[in-house]
Image (cartoon, rainbow, N blue to C red; front, side):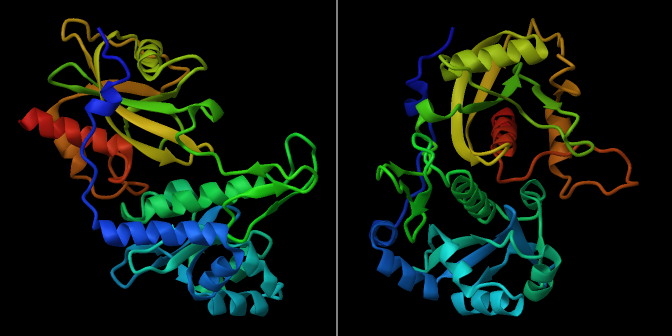
Length: 344
């Protein structure tokens, strides 16, 4: 009934073509920053720094009315810290994110110890909860702030060695922490190391002509999305998907195909794998687990097309309308892929 895990290797979309020379040089440059503290410190002085406050990114409104992550250079951040009466050495806590295509090092820094309103006034922006920021940013910017939050959270929760209880100390890039007692090195958990964290499978169920979407009570009013669930220990991806579909909506899956993956920062850092799942058109009666979902129902292509036309979440007082997750999410990608296949 189900293809083995090799489907993850054979049914993937091709990776985007890169200019190898530029990409390779940037990756080697970033690796050098991780290994050389003095080189990283120099890059920080000329780098681009994204600011956070208790893990919420700072966003600024553009002239076009859209939003973007607020980025500052080193001297600007030092001036902000000075004006707010903070130690300028706080800049040393910035964590390396990567390198832009313009070969500029990118960092993130959490100013949670400072007054939020005062920082917002100085920076002419607002710290926005990461979930909300996903609806305000473009596809290229959302993963950047997501990665920044994940790295900052890891440093905040990894200040002590899990074996000795002694403090850990980071390198300049923030790419590792070292136990002060034993010298044990800790790295931010790789999203590919399944043994260290539970992956999450997200799936769009279809009966051939309709797709199944659901919503939790915590979702914004009117938003429906693909279903998802954590893999239990000992489960493979296919087993977790079939179990979740059975538990949440009472259906049996016949076929599974892999779409793509994504870092997902909620509730912490997760590895999200997107899949399409098919059920028999003869067995589509839903039995929704209301402890898991507030609602789940089938949507026709026409209904999905209508929901895709909703460009922004409805405001309070607007008529009820079905709308979908942001464009850069796996859920939206799965829905878009399904509509493309239906038209074909």
